[in-house]
Structures are given as C-alpha cells and as structure tokens.
Length: 318
Image (tube, rainbow, N blue to C red; front, side):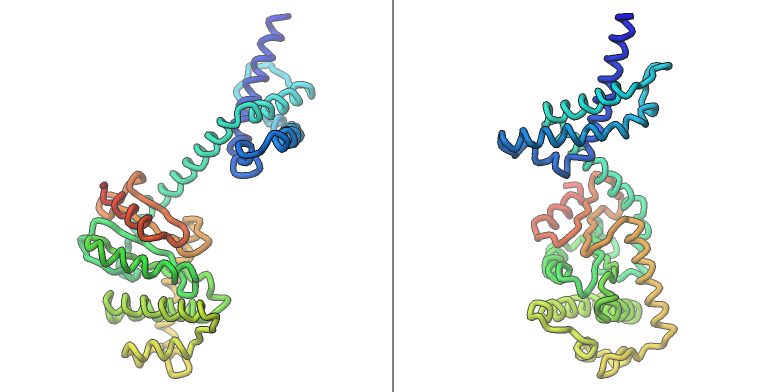
C-alpha cells in the first residue's frame, strides 16, 4: 500500500510539472514575465495571484488522461488540486525556467513562420505579376508587404532605397497589401497604378513611381494633410502617364484592366492571410537560389538600415 501511494504521488508530481511547462509557455508573455522584475512585496502578491490562478488548472487536470500515466490511475479532486498547486509553486520557485520556456515557445513559433515562408517561396518570388526591382541572377530577395498609405511603410521606404543602392546582388519584390483601402482610395488606386506601370513599362518605371508616391504620401501624412486622388493624378501625369487618370483622379483605364489589376491585389491579400500577416510593412529577406529557414529573416514593422543589412548578409550566408 505504501509503495502504491508513493508511485501515485510521483506520477501526480510528474503530471504537475508537465502542466507547469505548458502554463509556462502560456504565461511568459503575460503577467508571468514580470516575476523577474518585481520587488519582494509585489512578489508575495504575485505569488498569491499565481497560486489562485493555478487552482484553475483543475480544468486542465480534467484532460489529464491525455498525459502519459500508468493504466488504472484515477485522479480524485484532491489529486487535481495537488497538481494545480504543485505546478503553480514550481513556476514561482523556478522563474528562470518560466522565462526559458517562453523563449523556446517563441522560437518554435518563429520557426513555424519561417517554414511557411520558405514553403511558399515560389509565390513570393513570382516575377510576372509581382513588381520587382534588381538583377535576374540576384542571390538575395527582399520582399515587402506594404500599403502606400501606411506611415511605417513610408518611413521604411528610404531605408529600403539605401539597401537596394548598396547591395547590387539583391532583388526586391513589392507585394501590395492594401489594408487601408477602406479608409482612403489612394491605397487601392496606388496599388493598381503601380501594377499597371510595372506591367506596361517595366521595373525601372515602376520603381520610380513607387518611391515617388511613398515620398509624397509620407510628406502629406507628416503635415497632417489629405493625399487625394487629384494629388495622385498630378503625380502620375508629372511622370508622363496620361492614360491612367484624368485631372480629378478618375481612372481612364478600362474596367477589364482594373479588374485584372485588382485580382493581383486580391491574390496578395490571400497570401498575406495564409502567412498570418495582418499589418504593414512586413519584410522577408531570403536566399533566392537556396532558401532555408536558417538564412531567412521575417521583420514585421519598419527596420532601420542596420537590421535590414544584417538580414541581407544572413541571407547571403555571411
């Protein structure tokens, strides 16, 4: 009888530690991440809070049949309470393991995201419908999901320009991700115009238009001024394109052409959704000829030049 009780107790503690590891991954980016930084008084309060919260692990204990355990082990309510308290106390006594568990969880998530990118490389590096700029035989790709009316995209535009200028063996792919289309017509209009210019006039003319619109829209936003279809029409006509917009900013392109361009934007939106991107910009830097997880970098937000250059060097294998 004594041996059976001892075995049962050890098993309960094992289950508690397994659950403790699970909770560590869930808590690390929440209140649990404050454990290391709190003072003694707040530690005591936090400990009580974690113990109370851990008692709710009784709900998790109901699924304990999914944890490897000896056949015939039956968990009583007292056992479940012990599991919850043991897991909570373990997290309190070993906060360094809590932090480490969180880091590993985040690393696993980053690895999954990178794998998704590498597995969709053919779509990301498609060149017929995706505006791109750089040599055909480039070793490194910089892919940007962007919206012309995104402040952070505007902010990162000169950084990307500098990186392109200083890395001749990089090809940049521009994926219109028009998340602001319901707020301003410039989001969708700019995307369609850029796609049209790329389709008809090529990458050099596209790159000129892209940088010009990013710059003008950025200045207007910084000055808290609206950037209107009429402003866009003036920009387009200033670049020499008379067949795209009239003076008021109405499209002169055929409905069929606009639909074709919108289809490309829709495909980009679906791709972004598949990759779980919900904001702009998102930069992906990867090796074109031999894409691998270890040389691929995903950067949500506006990177500075140093971070972007680091990612390019990493993709080169440096």
